[in-house]
Amino acid sequence: MVQTVPGGSQPSRNARWLRRGVIALLVLVAGYVAYGRLDRYFLDRSLVIASPDSIPSQPRLLTYANTLGRAAYSERCASCHGADLKGDQKKGIPDLTDADWLYDYGRISDIERTVLYGIRSGVGKSHNVTDMPGIGLQKALNKDEIKDVIAYVLSLSKHEGDPAAIERGSKIFQDKGVCYDCHSRDASGVPDYGAPNLTDDVWLYGGDYDTIYKSVYDGRHGRCPGWIGQLSFATIRAIAVYVHANSKESPESPLRSAKSANAGISG
Image (tube, rainbow, N blue to C red):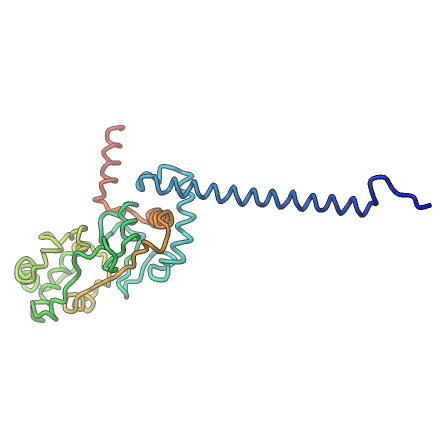
């Protein structure tokens, strides 16, 4: 007669406990994954619903946006602007870490529009009102006149030059060359057009004589892709938040002005 052990053999009980343990672990993992997805869904939703320029005042949302934005920037933007966001002056790719902005003022909402629609990208709503015409190619100015304009432009950023050439260049800038139409009468630029400020020492393509001559003679037609339709809106906003967190707003930014005014009131 064979004796049986109540509850089955020891190996059988161990196998059942092992199966139960595995099932419990799988349930926990599935729950964790589901929670993570649900949490991300709500964070994405909050990111989209929030006013973009209010995100820096919301710590958890800001942390999430920076994490998401860093990964997306690395994948989509770093190949041109660099991992350090410093750009490439030889190719006319702007530095994203300073306070000098071609379009608008460097607010999250401003950066977001550029990430969404791009610059001369062929996408509707992209920045494409104007670009730098080839003044020499179009024979609007001759080579000597271009040299005078360059002398004037360089003088605006404290470069010394021939006073007579600077004087002639100033008149051409304000009249025949029609440079003022984009860069404004005082040469401080127009953010609505993407016309750069010529009075500082920040240059998109380089501030040496030969590079400026090429810009004036041949023109410039920089382009940035728009990511609308290729990335989710939450990801696009996160890229804008990440870039903003690593840059500075223009001194003329309405947000900076508002903060200064509020500081004056509270003080």
